[in-house]
Length: 199
Image (cartoon, rainbow, N blue to C red; front, side, top):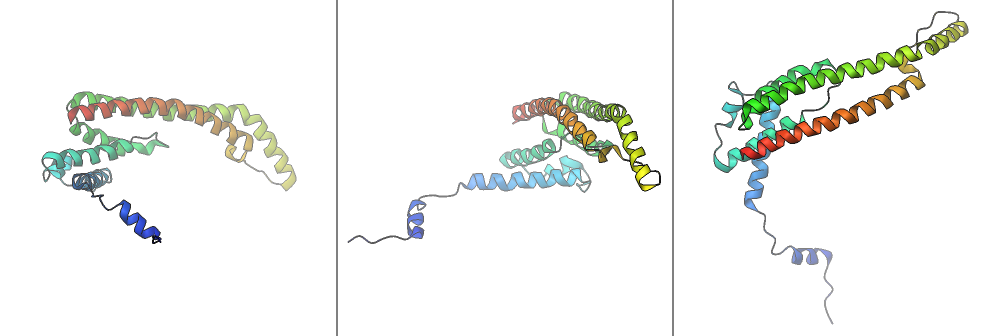
């Protein structure tokens, strides 16, 4: 009669010949180091000499891996802004990312275009909100008058308190975001191609 094996014994038999790829493990660790370097640069806590100084301790494959980690983090930080405070972070990316690619001038030009792109995006968001506020202003004033009559004192409503306004604003923002996200993805793809060509 055959012995019934436990789930643990079966799992151990199946993984008996599996050995970790030491190079892959090292690459992952160094890529994480690159991400940490980029994170400190973005947060203003990087080394005095910036990226160049931080990369001095790496050579060969490790240098490529650490650059990949830095690049991934910088690219991940290129997102549509929610307000005017995106400037300092974008400037840090503009000053750092071109150092990772061969065609530094082209990368710098793309990132300068991105700054204009982000500004245009914020202007379009503001225009959408202003237009909706104008369209729905008479209705909002009417609701304010009704509420003022009910409570006996003057009432001011924030347009975002109006469900119709909030829904219309969200719908228009979503359409705008979709168009801009598509364009941003194209720019990121171009930067990825430039980085890959450097490797």
